Image 1: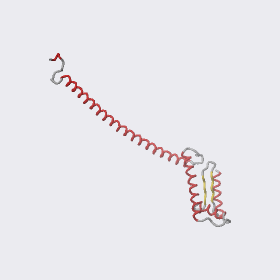
Image 2: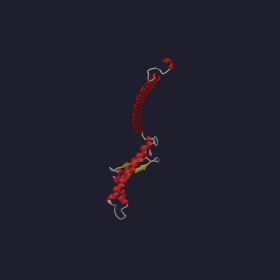
Image 3: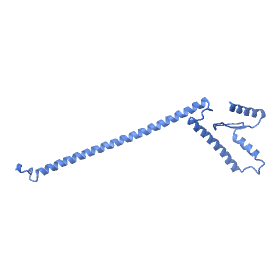
Image 4: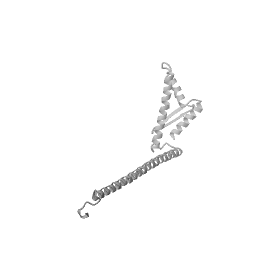
Amino acid sequence: KRRNGLLKKAYELSVLCDAEVALIIFSSRGRLFEFSTSSCIYKTLERYRSCSFASEASAPPEAELNNYQEYLKLKTRIEFLQTTQRNLLGEDLGPLSIKELEQLENQIEISLKHIRSSKNQQMLDQLFELKRKEQQLQDSNKDLRRKIQEIGEENVLRLTCQDLGPTGSSGHPDDA
């Protein structure tokens, strides 16, 4: 309520005084709120900076000014991303409106669907790979059984040949 009151007062001040107003608020939880009557708060901040440092030597070089503007943009972006990350983790949800909470819930549901889809795809890939390996092992087992059978048949044939001997008899004296 106090934050909205401040934002309202800033707007009223800009209208009543026909002034360029910029308001920056950081909540106790680190969330950034800003208001500007100009199209870009950075322009107002830069105007303030140039007026407040006018007594110093000269205005900063253009490159330095651009760097500072880039710094401000990146800082604001980082703060926004940190707040968003905390919200996605379920933290600092107090300042969010019902609409913002619903949007956050939808984002989380969409992310969860993507995660589940990715997990299911990986599980299907693993299942396919395991079935392929199972088929390879079954084929290897068939080959080994066939080789064992061939070796067994060769051994039976060899033993039979040894028992018959070179004359065709079993080689036992009883057979003569």
